[in-house]
Image 1 (cartoon, one colour):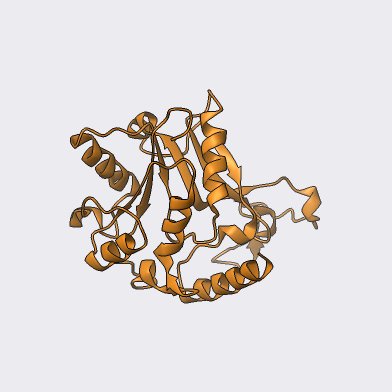
Image 2 (tube, helix red, strand yellow):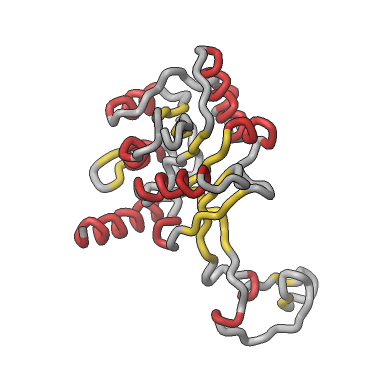
Amino acid sequence: MYKGKNILGLIPARGGSKGLPRKNIKPLSGKPLIAWTIEQALASKYLDRVVVSTDDKEIAEISKKYGAKVPFMRPKELARDDSTTSDVILHALNWFESTGKKYDYLALLESTSPLREKNDIDKCIELLINNEAAKSIVSVSKLESAHPEFNAVIDKKSGFIKKVDGTTEFKVLRRQDIPDIYFFDGTIYISETSILKIKRTFCHKFTMAYIVPHWKSLEIDELSDIICAEALLKSKLSKS
């Protein structure tokens, strides 16, 4: 709780991931991937409850082992490849409301972003609740080599390159000469639940940005990401 506001931490983790099968419980530096997010959420000063939404019994048991609550099993129809995160969130909120429990804010924490820290969660909560005009906050990270100014498309007929906007006026630019652009890195999403129900998204005109360094933005989608995360965690732990 922060300033009298009840805050739910929700970690979605379905069992049927395709790119990296069973990725939510793949080992990462000695513990299942999802355990990193669970421990970060439990270490937050402000999250009132940390819940895992899953359709998978093994994920549920591992989540409970590391301290998360699994008060319900996610319906199979909400664990398909085409299931939306917003439907998963609304299912969780509706389930709690059916038991008489309402939350003022919801923090969505993806298990595939294991490099966030507990302070990131708490800073986001403080920034959002202390800004009367804001309704949600999302984490972003600065684009570096993938900046649109450094990209091109290939004409299918000629084989010649063009800029993404179709023009061919290429300029040699230094990084300091181009505007900063950010991408949604997936580390943290927080919103007032009332607005989340209406918008069904965290991103709208009342959304704040929380900038995270590039190394924290690593998202686990394939085996090489786990290898990179292992190296980053090893480096981080050696300096602590």
